[in-house]
Image (tube, one colour):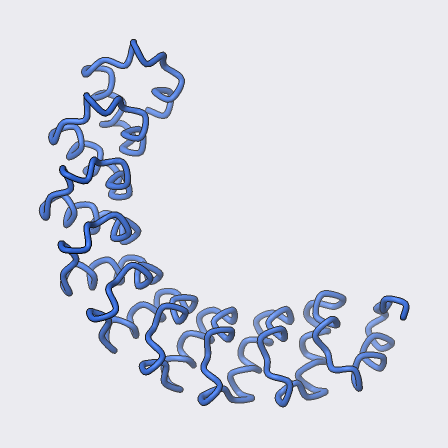
Length: 219
């Protein structure tokens, strides 16, 4: 399938393109525009939902978009805005949490956001601020410590910071200054050494650097 990319344009016949697309939907990208029929696009999407990215806009029907999103939640990104329904967005998010990024704001429900962060904590980035409760933030950070960077100030707690830093010391970067205790900083440095030491407050830095044999930059 992918070999179609290396076939000379004049040799990319209808028959060859059909064979290639049936094997691997992504090669629709390399099919000449004049050969992209509705039937060929359906073949591509049946193989790979994300192939919707290479379907001409006018051929992205409701039925084709539904098929694409059922195959791959990532395909929601390429669904025309007027075809994005609550049901379609829910299907996408259940399959791929970060598809929440491509859900229109007025369709983002609490239930949908919960599903998204359970699948991928990083999806917290795309949850509307008013829905970023303590509960959803805890789910997100537990799933992916990187989500700590998207927790609103009002719901940030030392417990959330500990969950993130326990996963990886590099997430000390997202911990607010008032929560960077000696114990939390030590947990981070013990995990990621010189990478984490950069984010340790001045008053703990030398002690932790010495304890974990980390060379600090010369002043």
